[in-house]
Image 1 (cartoon, one colour):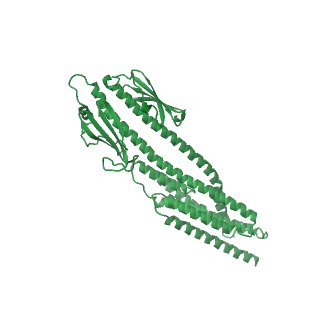
Image 2: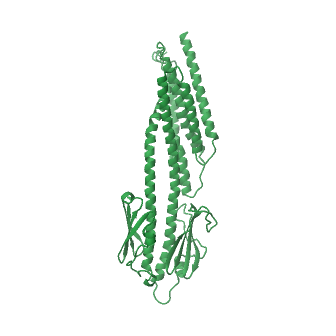
Image 3: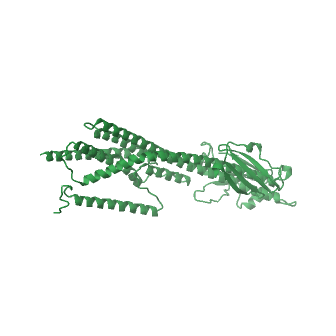
Length: 225
Length: 255
């Protein structure tokens, strides 16, 4: 008789455990799936994490009810709160860290892009200037002539940059080509500059843009955005 | 009938249950391994983890890499969503529920010492769930500490690298100034194929990131940059008569 009573009690408790598990799975899964869709997993994960924490607190409240001793209930309750708090701290920290690293990637891309743009719009006119002042004799070519000789196909409006790697979408455009003045304008096509409202030469808005002006007196460099 | 499995220490049917559990676990392990193997052949790393934030982090870094290459971000694939939800359900719903409710039942049953519980598959499952709960509870503290420490170190390293990148860029433009000076004739303020007389322009001698000094010979210029943010860190370069920068030397935290 006693054994039958115990068996029935065990079956009841197994049923209750299964009910809790099913309810928890449905609750957390629904919250995860119904969270606003995004290009990131974090909104869904955070919603599921909060739902999971709420479920854990509810389940622990049920599991630690009387007639368990007060001492045991307090210890386990405190330990659960500490673990939940540390878990939340790690969770939030990990999200912040990965978002920081993703932002850093774009900042690094911006630094690389700006440095490459600046060097290109400096090296090309520097080479022209050097060759211009190496000329001897009465018949000297103009800056524009030397520039066109070194950059075949260079006319006003032409992009003289050839992509060097996948993702290298920036342009170096000749915006002025006069005998004594050459202007080069370099622009990124997907890396943001300082001013998000800046109107770029090619019609885009907010992209990085650098300019250099070559005259017989030297090179002037302007960081436009 | 087996004498061993019919003893009071084992529940009836224990053997086939433990065999079934072993087969299920083995099949799951083989499936996970084959998924990881096929993913690695495609050049995609896909972590199998009990910590869901690793899957979230993988998606964020993946989108960051796409943005780096000029591509638009992509939504998370369904596989990753399942991989992210699974650990949440296991570590926050299934294992704690099984462990704590069974623990409560066993603790209250201690009041009935005459009841001897035979070993069941549910007992093994309870032990496994307990292992997961204890593992998560014990690991979360060190993970929080080391994670925060790693984050602080990463931020510090990024700040140093960022400062160094700006200084490198400013040095490059000083080198361009020096190369121009070398090219231009004296009547235009240049050195006419000599660096003698070149000085760092006043506006560029001290910037937000560093202060710059120069040592000049006829055919070479040496620049030294001392970081404003990390005063023990310096960068030194030489510029030759062709305007090429050589002999980069980094000291202090820039090493």
